Amino acid sequence: MKTTLNWEKGTFKSTYKIYSENILVGKLKEISFSQSTDGELNGKFYSFKTKGFFKQVTQIIDSENGSKIGKITYNSRMTKARIEYADRVTNLKYNNAWNTKWSLFDSEGVQIFYQGSSTRGRIEFDTQNDLLALTGLFIPNYYRQMKFAVYTSVFTAVFIPIFIAVLI
Image (cartoon, rainbow, N blue to C red; front, side):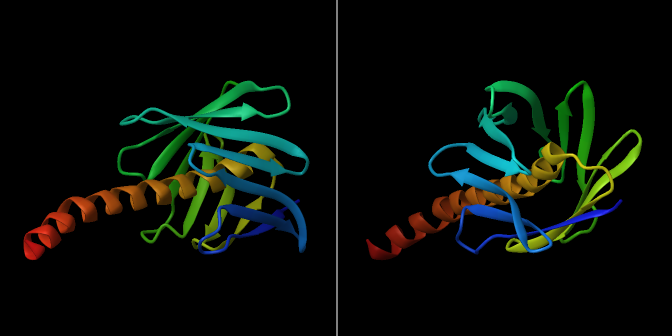
C-alpha cells in the first residue's frame, strides 16, 4: 500500500512539520547553534548529530535509549549521500538538476521518493520506514545549510575587503 506524507517548513523556520492526511504525524527540528537535529515520526524519536569539519559524518541516534543506530556520509559535491543502519546501506540521490526531486534506494531498488522545495513537499513510499523517511528529509536540509555557509563565507571573504578599501 502506497503511503504519502506531506511536509512544510516556513522560510525562516527550523522545523519541518510532517502530515498524513492533514494530521500532524512528525517533526524534524534543527537545534540552534549546534550540529544536531531531532526528528519524530509516528511516535519514534531520532537525533541526527553531525561531527567533523572537512569530512563531516552524521550519527543517527535512537533518542529513546541513546544508542547509535546508523550514520550518514556525504559526497563532496553535495549531490549524494550514503546511509548505513542495521547492517544495510541505503543511498540518496537527486533525480533532477534543480534538486527538487530525490530518492532513497538500496540494492533492491527505490524505496522512498521525495519531491519538494525549501518550504513544502511530499514523501511517497510503499514500505513504512520512519527512520529512512526522516533521514531522506534531513539530508537535503543539511546540504542547504552547508551551501548557505559556503556562500556566506565567500561573500564575506570577497566583499568585506572591497567595502573596507572603498571606505578608507
